[in-house]
Image (cartoon, rainbow, N blue to C red; front, top):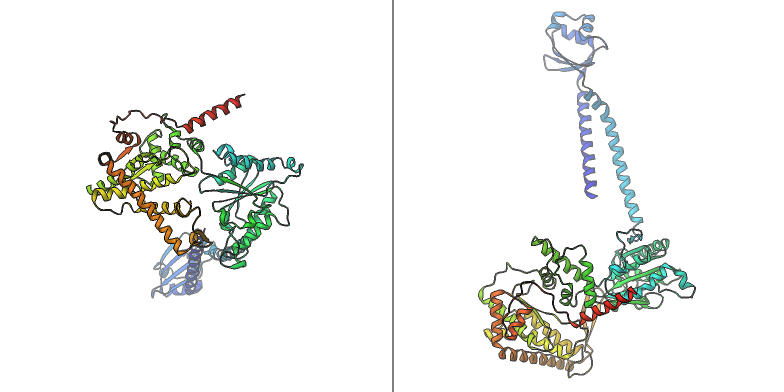
Length: 637
């Protein structure tokens, strides 16, 4: 738009310059002397005239001394006839060079229209400037209007229902009451029941909070107004509150309706905790939201749904009954939900028959719905890059590693020594992990660089776990230190490779002591993270323990790490031959899959299968299938 305005201004300026030039050129022409026909006859008789040029009714004269004159001839009469009547000497007249031109219609119209064009350009410029000023005034007047986007329930292309949201069965049931109220409010009103005015969706990023809110609107068939919390806040005080008022005003006109505020923690943080005091723009916006949700006015049939992944920073007034008094937690999907999510995102993608989504679900514990969508898309992209007509199982497995660690850096060149160090390092992680009872099973070992990692060992739990024991953490510490121990044992020195492992090990050991109460210091936590409103998360740590206790914490953390190092060292020393075998295979093939790795650990010969077979179903998937079969049987009845 700005570019168009600049171009229009340049065009107007250019036309004005052309008009000015033409007018100036015409004014210069007026300086030529205009004479009568009688004087022309006298000059011809005196043989002063060199040439005469006739252009329509206009006559241009040039004397022998290069002086220019002009005159007009009589209408409907030739110049020779006119001059003869005025007594011109024929001999002198014959010596004059006479040129005759047909009258130019273009020059006539240019000369006639240029003044009018000039006037039109001036009027157009004034109109353009006035319109721009009016537009600026209208933008200033609409500055406080809401920027919410509305999804029409009649638009089938954008309609989303609970069928499009996999998993979260409890969340759907909780939100089903909201849908029923929006469809049949009288059923609840007859009983004297009041539906919650606000529903707060809690969950980690990517778990589908926004999708769930859209599904509620789609199921209820009502208008859906969506806006982000950050869109309320502006540099001018009072604009955010004005936009809140306008948002609810629009929703009331379309009632019954749903107002969805994404990332409400942008404006809903604790009041008085940040800079600016009570006059802060963010706090005024929050005050207006509180009043609109449960103030003097009745917002019947307008339900507010908000989403956040930071419920701990919200103002208590938002969470009280009458406002966001219903909270729905959207958890990370379990293995059953992951299978359903993968099926949804597999729609429209051409898959080979041997693609096993259950195996993909087993390999992706801790993945959110957004991660799984990204995984399926990356798999399709990888298949397209290889010019395949269908997505293969290998493409999806490769996509898992790409989502977790980044793309493979196959072009990265490592010399023999670095490659050997990396192979022994990853072999140390894998060997220690395979030797400990509580460690996660090893699914893949590779020395192909991904992201910032020179190599990686992919360990995936056999089933989803929400609770972890102290034994699990201790074995995890030993696995993390496996690469460090091997480097020091085999090469007599350590590199910068284990730096990330040591950082994770230190964090895990400190969490065992300070967060989980699994140490000799007793059943209590140590320290509390405080969030400064404008400085991001985990900015400071509030110490609720003494310096003496801090020394004890450091001592116990060091003991956990040292004990884990000793465990890893014992395993590697005892199974040095296996360590060498794993390292040699990695140096040769660069990647070892689960079956081949297990064959090496068990001392068996690995025979690769030509066709990829389905992984043996674990007990959890068998139970899921049995439940699904029972539900299908009941539905058929």
